[in-house]
Length: 154
Image (cartoon, rainbow, N blue to C red):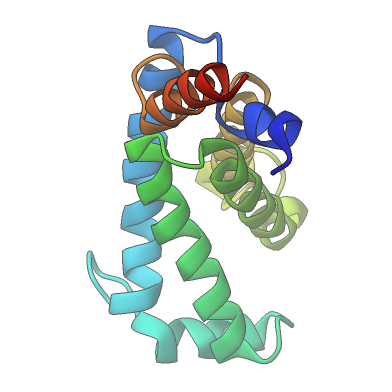
């Protein structure tokens, strides 16, 4: 078992700040993913989102909608739980950087359909990649259990 990799994924010295970032970000991403995957909250579901994705050059549209929606929904769920936070944040950051490509031509401001909202979600995800899930997370519980088990076997 690669101990260093496991420690990098699960260990975090962050405190309450990581929880404050993780939970709202996760909720927002889950809601957007639910729009794409399930048609909830006024979304178009996979079929409609897939048609939109295809129209803006992300083909095959249905697959791109499935990937984006899954990244947002399941990545957001992982962030809320603080479970595999760094890998989930990589997925959500990538998804948001791709979303920025759709809006970049409209400038910064969301009032002009710009990229500021996707940028904010992306950099918040990047912050979680850097700092990890924090003390109040399932990742922290896993890291503690792993450390305790490795002490017993040493």
